[in-house]
Amino acid sequence: MARDKKRIVVLGGGFAGVQCTKKLEELFKNDSEIEIVIVSEDNFLLFTPMLPQVASGMIETRHIVMPIRTITKKSIFYEGRVKNIDPYGKIVNLWGSGNKRGISLHYDFLVVALGSETNFFGMSDLEKNAYQMKTLNDAVMVRNRIIDMLEQAENETNPILKQSLLRFVVVGGGFAGIETAGEIMDLLLDVRKYYPNISRDDIKVIVLEALPNILPGFSDELAKFAQEKLTEHGIDIRLQTAVTSFDGDEVMTKRLDGDKNDESMVDSIQSKTVIWTAGVTPVNTIKRSLFKTDKGKIVVDRFLEVKDFPEVFAIGDCASFYDPKTNRPFAPTAQLAEAQAKVAAKNLYSIIRNKEKTEFVYESRGQMAIIGKRTGIASFLGMNIHGIVAWFLWRNVYLSKIPTWDKRFRVFLDWAADAIFDRDISRLKFMRREPEKEYKVLDEVDDVW
Image (cartoon, rainbow, N blue to C red; front, side, top):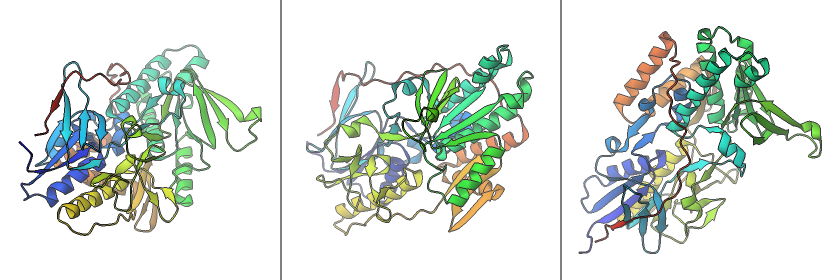
């Protein structure tokens, strides 16, 4: 029997995918002829801006994850990993495994919002030995690692080894890197009193950034203020410095402001812990798809529709959309993802209702970052703000963006408890997860009817 309903399938459970699904539900709330489906590898939306605070133990892990089923109201949800997309047959295939059947989903309209993954730029040793700050598991692993290093260093008698145990290197001076470095330093200073053999001078947090400044996208004034405050806080920021390798014990770096053949530009840092936040790349599903791509991202027109495949939209980190003012890609932020999600949903509504589509024009509402305890920077409504006011603004804005009231309340309580009590130094012994390999489909359930 042929399907009578028009089906819209949204791929991805991040900010772009969830926001698009919510907007579609709002637009088609009274239309029984439209079926909305959302597919996500996890059954929750991860509130990534607060990952560094999970790594520092300020916020509990469950408090920054929102089950997608509690956010969306009328959509059909599938937890699964996208195997491939057939835009000619209008089919999306999901992987199966030993205890999970593969699924084939037919669509009439498609929104691709599969996000991105960490980009190690071909450095396999870094991919193997460095920690990341992309998933909830990453944040918990970083926190465990920091506490493990403190436990080892407390009773270490070799001063050189002790120094390398207490030296933490963050690669990347963007939002994720700077906020992670600030949170790590706060955690180390807060819990140091429990480790009498570790002095303040033993602790070192280093940020390595290949560009001439941190926090690209902020004004030079705000970026300079952030750098000064981080330096005052004891964080060592090294600009125009690229990482070339990391074997688990030593980070090799190269200065980018000198002669390529100048050996003095090469340096090493003895450290056991590197946290990589220096770049993202689209997922392999996108790279091997039939869609036209630019640097791995799906090429879209000004309506966010995919080139050569009308009725397919791409949004968020996996879409290639250039800022017409600078002719450069927009920074991959949650704010951009949500703005694109709303326009894509409106354009789908326009197509189905035979109305005129809306061109995507992005106007940033501002940027903000926390750079340490009770200190932040913000560019908001044309104003540059820094210090405790920016920190307070950051907390209010991000708290308001958490989709559910129960999670907002839990995060607020975590912040309140952190202001009163010391941080927990229990180390939860989770095993480091091996990278998930693509597995063979055992069986596919075809729901096309």
